[in-house]
Length: 351
Image 1 (cartoon, rainbow, N blue to C red):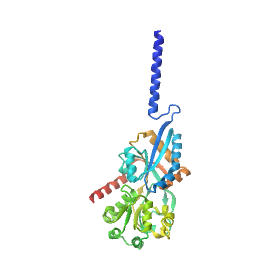
Image 2: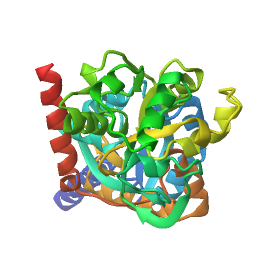
Image 3: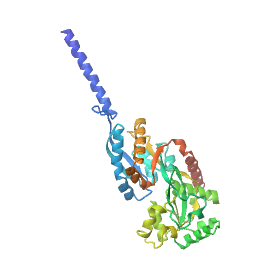
Image 4: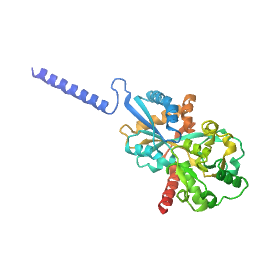
């Protein structure tokens, strides 16, 4: 009888241990039937560099692509939730707070929030047929075309529009004349949020380098909520100059004549009046404070996005951001961006 009782106790203890192991596996997200790690919701956010509805529509297929690629890598994802932040900063804050798991954000936004965000990938882009430091070289009236060379950096452009002031500035540049601070200060400007590399940071550095002034020194500089609204303002003459990535006119050439109701082509009616130093490409960053993020998931996300970027269907989705693919990144890749951010913060504080 004692032997039977001892055997029963041993059996109960063994069952208890098995139950405990099952509970632990479920807690850390592993399905004890097929070995896949389960994620209920993967939250992905984009910055509003294009109109939010346009981004949401274009990236809808990304949800299933991520599910499929992560499934191959051992993750069963219930839902991929894609949102567009109201501002660049809102996405950075979401990563910092852990309410967003993955953010597709510029380098400037990443370094501003790198206490809570970790860069895992850098986007590659098609290079451009024009890549000169000289603004005049962009103003041949011909479209800027994509080249077959992949690039990990891009430039910011100062683009003047069809308004009288805009054309005055373009004419001066094309004549080989140096623009004065008074020339620029007399124009109405469109800028982006302060963490946007092409829409604020690098243009601010360019102004500092050329004139010892910052964006905050301009008499008239309004913040646009997207590049689409900035180009709409440029087309209507509400602003004379905008700052944007090179060459954003490729993305708005058709809408320039349709939605924005211009008669001439965007290549004829606009001109580049300034070109910044190269900017390291956009990032895919993850939240350090996400409840689901760990080293294994980071590795899986890196491979998933790389795989997606290597397919034609994937390239069709990510081209909304002018991305062509992805390569593994490390924090030190963005040290120049950190230096740029520091200088802009110092300039802002000084003003």
